[in-house]
Image 1 (cartoon, rainbow, N blue to C red):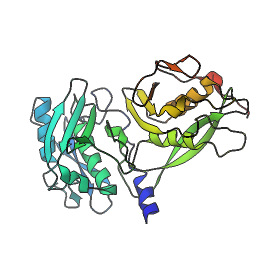
Image 2: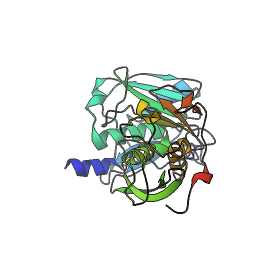
Image 3: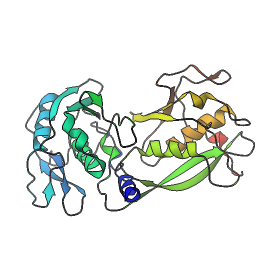
Image 4: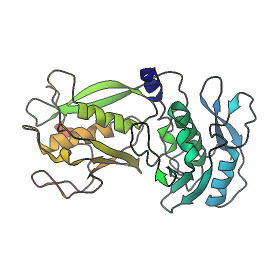
Length: 309
């Protein structure tokens, strides 16, 4: 039962890959000028929508208006609200960098599994249509929302969610591991079963931490490395490891270790990652191992990719 639920959960995040700003989110406003209020189809468990014309002008008013509409019964009989009546929004705050923070009361903690992810999806996809809102984060009892793995959910965009939980989603990825000499990368293609308990970036990095399964490929991330957080914002993927990531694996060059992560992330379909920045225990550190510059942004390095193992 737990395995089945985990597989169902593994596919809940990933369809609108265009962000939520005016130029990044083509779903922001349809051609009629209407926004969409998202609900759940009670029969199929799909995320569905109904058109709605906003009347408010300011960002604060629009947030309040759409949150209110998420409480209203949908017009379609088979649709239902994902946000339970007993869950209260205590307050919201908006910052000029496009971040909307929504504070819920303790009743939100009672939402678990698929129900919680669907609730989160309908709220984020609805509110990300507001022109000034690019990212949304949830707080429960003044603490950041934690997922089922105990990790902070962090900033969310509409592209973090898919529209159905009917079946597993197999997400094609390219994972880069070291060659035998440790001075280059070998591509391993895989299909990851994907649901809504985390981001696809998180799943990819965890695959890299677990190491390769193919003969002739070698791990690039030291044993004991833990992924603390990963967030993508404005095309930059921020990857936060514990200090174990700084340890060296014999024969693996610095470039091979770093770009196994960078190249794997930047080849994710439709995630629009253009750069990667690393953090260690939440902080940018100036150097990696033997004085290798580590405090800047890293872009894809194709020169390290080898055709043979």
